[in-house]
Length: 364
Picture 1: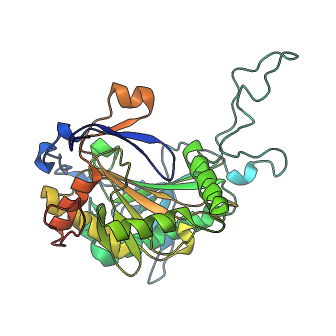
Picture 2 (picture 1 turned 90 degrees about the vertical axis):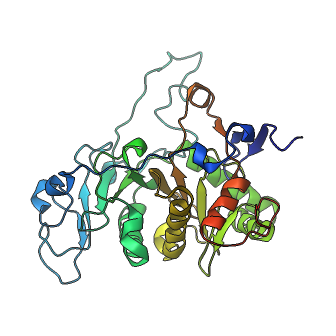
């Protein structure tokens, strides 16, 4: 197969396919990422800035180093209900008995009760009970996580973990995201995360949970992601960085250019039970800024263990918004990546002035 021939790859964690079409983009400057442009008056009207606590819903939590009353200045991170929530009510309102959502099946699924002996129920639904929070990462008007520096990023991650832990006992799954820039879906530019405490396990997460468990059983005690990062460090083709806490690499079946995955070096199922990753997340932002001259607009999310799952390994995915998912991707669920992860990792290492040591390196 030629160097530029399209290739199908399978993601180890999800089993999903990605198409690599390396002939369609030869250099990172082919992407010309659009930086998020701050509105001149955004800082003057931003409801997330310190001193404007009355412009948000009442806070549900805040880190206040010097103490103080809720909804007043003096906080370093702050969490409030989303003004336009995707979930409503409380997860505690869910029945404590009866069938629970597994992720791969649902009591609201119209096919779960269909049979020849009964009329099909083709329009099932269930209440979208849960929590949808906004976690403001900083009281100052910063628009990107990289502007917070490593200490600020570590403080933001600590706040995310506090809020995930607050919902982990009742929610079937807690999903935490960051959208930076309008192309990534951000409606307010002030740096913040969003948390969704869900009454179900998303199918994508359930699929990974099953694969983690199956690998553990088939290898008689092996851990899928832990074994994977050992191999990524050994091969170094897609490795971006490694420190005492975490590994950063471009996944084998990356669905988009310069996507990166941050994984703690030893297995910990739950993001909220760990304290690692801030330094390596800072490295990821520095690498992107080094390649493109500016941190591209991006999406970030944390994959943590669903409630009750022990054979898991939390990780964080970071995806710059450099391409557009079009009809093929939307219609098939298969992503086309025009910039192979080996090439992206070499560029990112070079931006960090880290010599590559694998066949994917340009300077090895």
